[in-house]
Length: 238
Ligand code: ADE
Image (cartoon, rainbow, N blue to C red; front, side, top):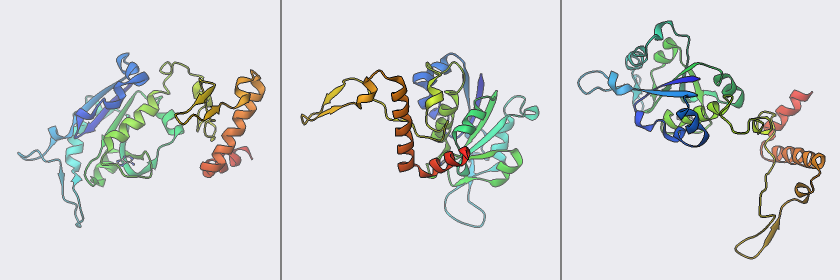
């Protein structure tokens, strides 16, 4: 079981997408829990402001360190806790499948979601937040990024996936992209009247040939659209 605590200015964004499908089922079954802490409850002055202008000038507003600390200290037992604390930001280290596997084994994860131009660096350094990015692009805030991270992590907890064997073959566990998949109808006639058959080998019943075909397709696809991954795979083999 993972207890997730989320520090956010938009608590109503949770559980959001995490309430659906297999992740939603895991939430109902208490395989993980989500608690949100509203940063606005810890704002300063009578306007309850949580952000301020950046020192040195520049656009946007920065989340204040005192607000982040107060929100964090509102969590029970936080002083003795060794919980992993993540701050979701495009300037963090890139999230990958291996990191999700590490996170899926934790008992508690605390996630700080930034909005504005960012968070005062002292809050990150002094309070011990690890900066994590979900990709080389910029979102408007960390809430959706937190849901991406949690969805990827929670599906790895034993018992969450209906078919755990699908974890073995999926993209990234072997540095290869997944092979293409097909289902019924065997011959699909599209709206223009063109007919499209599925690759013959898949309906041959010849398991060894199917395995070989799938591996070939995975390699072909990875070389073409993720040459960086293919190089990584080669390096691991050598
Ligand atoms: N917040 C805004 N963009 C983000 C990203 N790419 N990853 C994590 N958090 C973010």
